[in-house]
Image: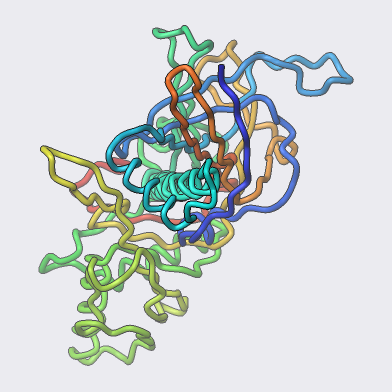
Length: 380
């Protein structure tokens, strides 16, 4: 016997990548019963739930072979008689006092604590997915036609190219939203000039260069290059550093996830300088390892408000193709989490599951330009 109760839970601390570049709004979900869910397990994307066939409009006979939404991120946690949960529950019971024989309030407090921890993990999962979008300029979803299907997984790739064609062949295998350059930190690297070129590339293709998002390592290389150029007699580069750190260099331990460190003029384009050091943890050989969402060499010039929820129909007649139905197929969503608690009376367990509402994804081309080293395959 299983009983469920669903609650809405606000995000405790919205992160930069999801809240700034992938905004949300309040419009009703028109595909309410057909979801694709991705679970994060030890930091890896996993295909989770499955979506069923159904009608798009109950008043019409229009039939979708499959309907999909953006992925959801979900985390589960079981409350059992283990030592950690038992000790925490006993502490909460003592806080409630002995006047509550059932200790129901203490159990609810325990559930809220566990749900909050799940929500934190969900938020980190959203961050990782958004950073993957910025890195790869693409989003791949895997799904099955039914829960029992095992051999017919299909990857739905959503990519953004400079013309009306799709697929890797559209640009000779290269994504046009990637700018190749020498690896920053080398003797012949030109970080400042590279950012200027990235701004021009974005603006020439209809974007609006506003923010420069980078890893702490790239920020150190950039500020060192600006200082060097000015020392060699180059005209003054206008920039303002809010938190200078070590000569403007910031490292992982110096900032919390994301920080607006200042602004600078790149060939006439004034960009906000944003350093992001968010990381997720996983256990390797009984040790907790921190893995950053953004690689060390990540640099990205971004036009803000580039994100909207992505939704469309997957037609089995063209397996692997993503059909975008235009603006009518875009479904906005709220930025809340759904927290569900289940009671398993047979095993005397209580579990808490926290999942996001459908996640956002880019909705237009040329929302950003990323950088890659010339020696590194584009899009890798």
